[in-house]
Image (cartoon, rainbow over all chains, first blue to last red; front, side, top):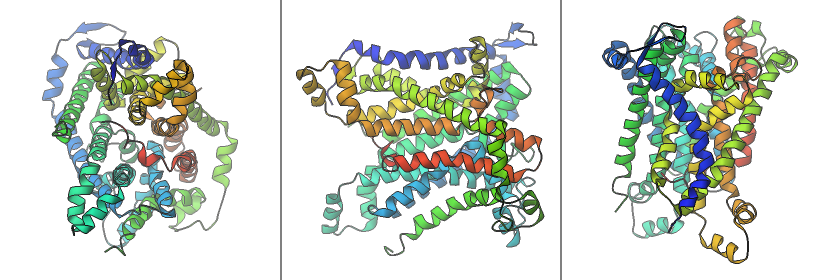
Length: 287
Length: 266
């Protein structure tokens, strides 16, 4: 669409700008402030320079949490995106079942995150939960509160349960926007179903899949409530993701300086990855 | 292949429903049954857990608090996002693209990073432990999303609509409220749905910014889980009740949810 240049449009944006700036800039500056100072309580602060940043970047604890975070995000993206596309492709395009599918699939998205954690906590209990009891009955030695491997399995299964529907809904929205004429033309040309997917459906879904990958990346990198209710970061530190570690340092130990430095590094990592995803996935769209 | 295609969504939906079924079925069991034996459905069907929640103010106030701040947040986010989205979809102005991207970066901010600064900021201006505090904090994530979604819907409306209205003698506010907003009603519904959703499911900020007066249901649940030991039935009943508002909202917007992001611009 041709847009007219109009500097007065700033007035329309002003309310949003004021609210978001108040909410984003003031807290962000507070974090920046803490990240370069040292405090022993009583609101007395000393200049610490970049010491906290060096400390965090060198600390094995941060490296481990970042490593676990990258593993978690990578794994759930690798599962949820293809699975979501497969389910969206298999869904009916018309008829009464469409509504039923959409409503049921959207359910997990609207459950408060701590309830999701609590639900899987109960579901996975080795003696009392359906999942835990079933796995133990058929011969697996499953206990997510004791064994790190089982904790990871439950964590990833929970996230797949929670968020695959978002990918399904987005991919489905992309698919229904394809006109029937495209399929008819493909049928006349005798295209295989793989060719239809590769040259008609996938390109049409590219934009919504970019959104899906970006949203899933950001949200899984920020995940806090569900794992903290499910495993609390344990057993040991085996499922302590970045947010859980950060809250432990900031609100648990009240180490404001290191926590603030870690916050900034954390935020920058997300921005960097989002920018890379965005650039790679939208490359070639400009032409 | 085509015959068995329906199996994929069917199996997926069963997988989605299993944990929900387990939660709901547990909410109708007595504590003795939950801890005593493994049963697939409630043997001694009881409504005791629900009775506790509906009669104890500590419990039902949590629901009321959550619904109040979610509503304030949804109305506030959509109200300020509407003119902004209009500006982004219709005009070019100094710094528009940078501003749009900066708004989206706020969607990426981890809540854990902002929890403590928010607490200090809102305490300093005296709105700690109010519904407004939580509603305001959630606008940080919801306004960018609402602008993004609404901008997509508005860009789908041809500009001739605006021009015709001006020729017909409408002033800008009259045009916006009487003609433009009804045209993008679906978009407003979708934006409101996503604001509702993210405000309803978020806990970390809601918990940090409230103490007693505005405490959300989710925080009441975590407290119960840790303080009263193994009241799993009660916890399950409270969890089941938090699913209901979402289910009602989904039912009303079922035809639009799939389109929500599809029309948004990346």
